[in-house]
Amino acid sequence: MNSSHQAQGTIFPAPNFNPIMDAQMLGGALQGFGCDKGMLISILTQRCNSQRLMIAEAYQNMYGRDLIGDLKEKLSDHFKDVMVGLMYPPPSYDAHELWHAMKYGSNLQEDIYSETSGHFRDTLMNLVQGSREEGYTDPAMAAQDAMVLWEACQQKTGEHKTMLQVILCNKSYQQLWLVFQEFQNISGQDIVDAINECYDGYFQELLVAIVLCVRDKPAYFAYRLHSAIHDFGFHNKTVIRILIARSEIDLMTIRKRYKERYGKSLFHDIKNFASGHYEKALLAICAGDAEDY
Image (cartoon, rainbow, N blue to C red; front, side, top):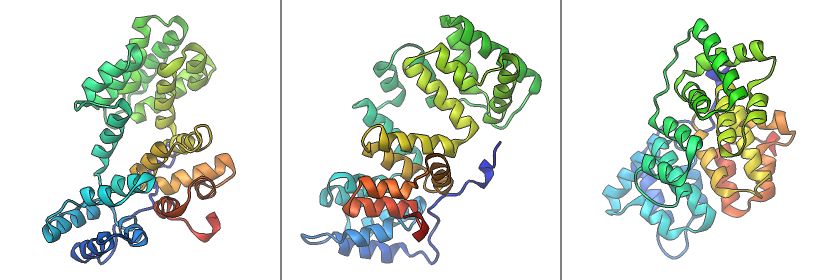
């Protein structure tokens, strides 16, 4: 796997952390008519997610109010989305976003089922159930799976689509890494090119996303950010979601991949499209240095 174990986030636990003091500062920043947005940024983007949850608890004890509720009430627009987004624990943050994309409902699997169709839906369902094997590799099996993938790209029957989906959703990332190499050996073709030739629509996009994620997750997120910023005229929801969701995992690495691949830094592109406290909050999450501007 390519150096993903060295992946680096941009947000780390704050040293000398004092949730009670932070809760007091936030209380002050959210009081009255005005609102000290700079203070909100300097506290919430400089604490890791588990620290933010402790601050919310201290805030509740101190003021008898819900911090997320107060942020929603006092803030507006995309700046609100960033600040509120920072307060969710990461897994529920993903669910929360998927739910928004589906527009309604409470049960994620039911939502996906009713909003999508066919093999695209089945693949999404598979991913949501999280049945992927962990860390297990079997080279002989990889060669077999690669043959199945190759056949699935030639034949394209419903049954082949199902087999494709089972392999991509359930095998460990390490195993898929081997499968993709074998696929190249058998077919003389890169699996992404093969998928793009054989399938179209959402199903194709999803399969390619899974492959890119397996190969190099930070590069995949760099690609998603770039397309959200440039192809969709700065699709705020996607940009916010990725920056927050990856901030403690590999956002620093995503920034490197972004710069390598697109020539301009993520910083540069955010500054170009966002403004005001919204821009400041996004840049703070990216944790940039002077040379990134």
